Image 1 (tube, rainbow, N blue to C red):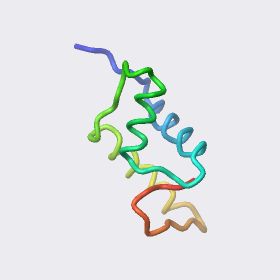
Image 2 (cartoon, rainbow, N blue to C red):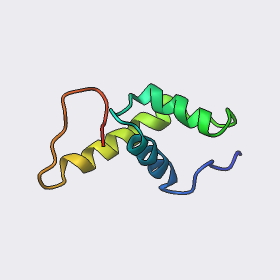
Image 3 (cartoon, helix red, strand yellow):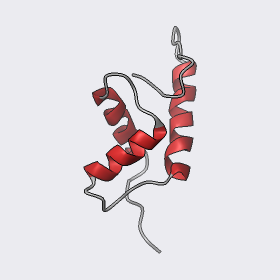
Length: 77
């Protein structure tokens, strides 16, 4: 069995870092490509890995007092 690439919670931190670096937010596919680039192609996450984590991040933003989500299909920070 292959060991996990990220320790618990670290993928979320990478996603947040990529979103913070982006000026206008990123689509999930763009995040997948950016992570693949960051790891030199040795690790490219699947959509099944990225989208559930984005959904969790979105839930956290929705529950933060005063937070507002745009109606766009991307998450901006």
